[in-house]
Length: 260
Image 1 (cartoon, rainbow, N blue to C red):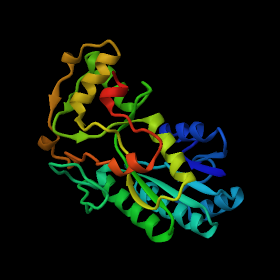
Image 2 (tube, rainbow, N blue to C red):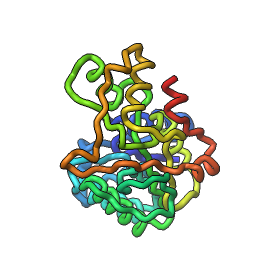
Image 3 (cartoon, helix red, strand yellow):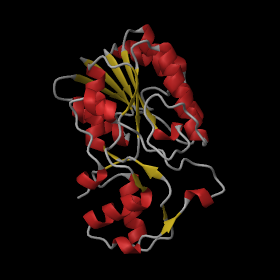
Image 4 (cartoon, rainbow, N blue to C red):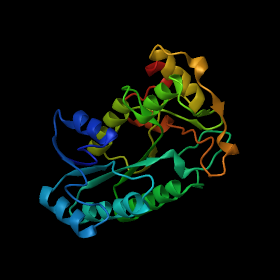
């Protein structure tokens, strides 16, 4: 299988997807230098040039709707025209908050511009590619180099800031997620699938786990609430990934396990 990975050159998740697919597949890693996903013609040319069997689309910019939403639509259009299977990486921020985990049947209700852009990306992909899979995930970390782990180390060292204790997510290890995405590219699962870690927890609890793993003092980390902020954002957006656990051979560990 020839697999094209957007964000595969410099993207945090994309580089792990490239590594996970390197054994047994021909992998094409592309980035913004190869094609600006906001440019439909550039995307069409890129996909036509490489003729992939499948595309894992990891590229996004949280603050740029054109990259996140329009870019996904352009990649989906090119994938459909060239007969490539499409795997879109989406996010738990398509939801606004609930007192129970969201399964794949839950209606989206984003409360942030980024969440709205991800919903638009999902709709474009599902409407364009009949065999596409939208893989919704959560906070991605685990190798020590993620933005979440780096933030915790800065806070533990005395930097100003605090971690939300009311925002609950299902953190996933970057290697687990990358392997799951390659498995989805290889398979025939269609539609929406929640692909997140097994444990739901607050950002503050996650930070304490990271601090303990790194030999830092977890008690230094201060807690705050997202609900108190003026800027809207998701609160409790835990994902129910039980369907993925049943369908995939890749095991999606919880943060309490992989940060132990």
